[in-house]
Length: 228
Length: 115
Image 1 (tube, rainbow over the protein chains, first blue to last red):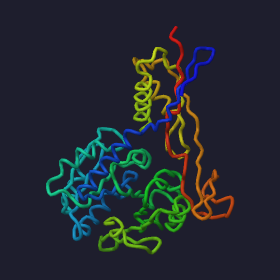
Image 2: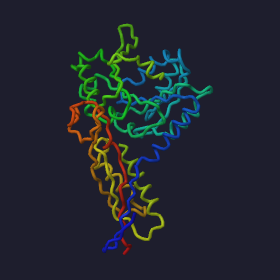
Image 3: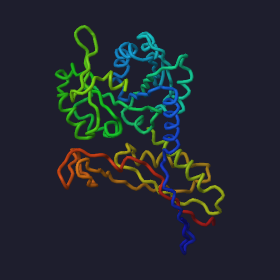
Image 4: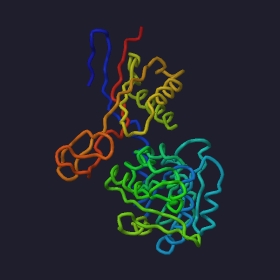
């Protein structure tokens, strides 16, 4: 569709998604994962929201039901991959050297580095960032936004894309809520207003240092939801 | 921060579309969804930095805002919501799906005769 006007200008309609290539790559990766019997789960959230701690505690539980592996994304260090390995699962660390998000090609490379046999459940922890990773799917079936109570009650409202464009939200560190004057129920209500289809979970550590999670709507457990 | 990646993609898409054309690209229009999580000033800054020493170095980037649209889960009405919580204007339901305002799209390019 071209037209030429009197000033020798030519307008050309393109109507093309700026991230078409990223999205296509993610779709290809998702299809390859499915064909290989791999269910990808993406985790995204701010630095310090508790993503790695969540995985450290979930991995041993999930490993009772499926072969599990983890891809960790950080700007630098392999600290998180080592924490996951210590929890018992194979893990590959992706260092982005400053980039604010993982992309599908990075995850594809990291997946190839995972030892055989490949996992049935692949957990992908993105770079700590509540904004950019939302725009870059990496072949996951579902994405989970991790938001800690300590980040503030209105965090979901302030970072809408993380709530609107993920399938679930887990509000962590709810045991800290009274100290940071946050009402976790209000955070749940904000998420509900913003994305009525989101699965919402609450998580905290008990006195023995064990992770306790609960579905805010009383539905299936976090573990079962991740297992699919 | 990821605006640089998006700006590089815009340049890639337009370079490809403009390849082989006699006229030069004077203007590129990109729509940015209100929920896309993109900072317009950062996108323009990144675009202007990355276009240097490319065939698009004289192209201007024009951003237009794409409003949020939602579709009511209960009665199917399409609407443009206000701030959260969203309410369907027809039936008042608070259950909805987002149908627009999440994307960044290269809408068009405008070519000018090379002088």
